[in-house]
Length: 509
Image 1 (spheres, rainbow, N blue to C red):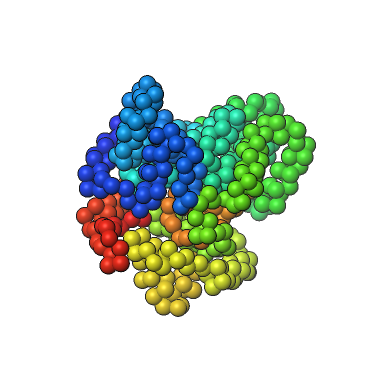
Image 2 (cartoon, rainbow, N blue to C red):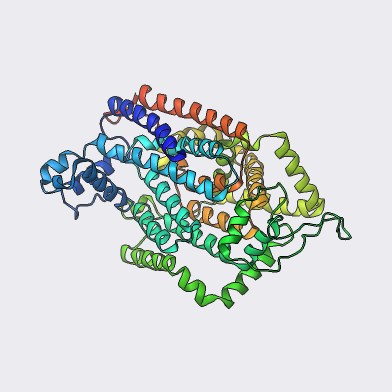
């Protein structure tokens, strides 16, 4: 029932806004001037045609062909001329509308798997709010690759959570055909699967299963005053039963794996990989095959991007990861900006100790200052294209004065401190490290500041932060609706013109 209700809710706004967008902006706009003609070439059966300005593979075009064929019947394929006529801008844009509905259902299933103790209303609320995330919501109504990319990655992750690794890798391979950088998320999902498979993860799960797996003894304390974990089970259960026990227990604000450091977790994982190398290699070989195929593609193509290679060269843009932290915290402002969260952070800093806290903060500040000084990239597109919001953020805020970009470094670091702390409360330290490395691998090589690139790491962040306060989720949804109304109104009803180029220009993310 939840899935049907979700589909109805998301479809209601998708249909209404799609009609409005197609009425006001019927012609291809921005990157659509490349994607829509290319998809129409595929509709004509001209699969050898390729626009050299397109950087991503043709996965979205394949999905478009499948939708057109399903809507109008496979018999229309025989008549190439009539089939190509069906690939109008409105029909092609509707592909992302359908994918947005599917993505919401997938998110609901992922939330159900990760947070099974939530009631159905809370899971629906979280799925709806995530579907309203401004970067995802806005591009639902244009023919971009973002919605398809997110949907494929979330579907891959859901299949991995269900331990269907072959199907997960197959979806992951298709996600790479939609956008090349998704290979990073294929590897990340494989890593999370291995972490879930590791014995140390099972021990952590067993330690949390107080009622069915172990008995916590509150009276037994060590010399430091901390409670011991409890009695270990005498009978070993299967992986499936352990996962069921873990998923049935509520999360607590105490760090799940506070007793084990990162070095210990890495050592445990490495030992497990060595002792069960053949078993793990067979189990996760589908992801390895996808990675090898991607390496062969890069070697054959001479790079990651397909077209416009001179404008999308790999550039060390370390400041990008700092921007992501701040943007994510602002997007989750109702979740993070609270007295309880602030006190929690202060307690964490007090627990670390003043000396260690000062040393770590000093190193982080030095790294942040070096990143913004030497690795802040001002891409020509960013400087010249005033249709994008980052253009104004760069000129009006970051470059308003030479000192601003340095003064923002402590804010960036505080944002990442909040993110790492929130993830560390419910995830293993090695999982948090893997997430950070995957996010950096996606964002750091990108020379252009595009908030669209932040979408997938943002969703992994939210899904694993375990926010359960319905009131805060509701406020976040209100925030997203306000941003969506503003950006869509600006896009549709505040057009402007360039003196040096004909045509109507519009504000876009």
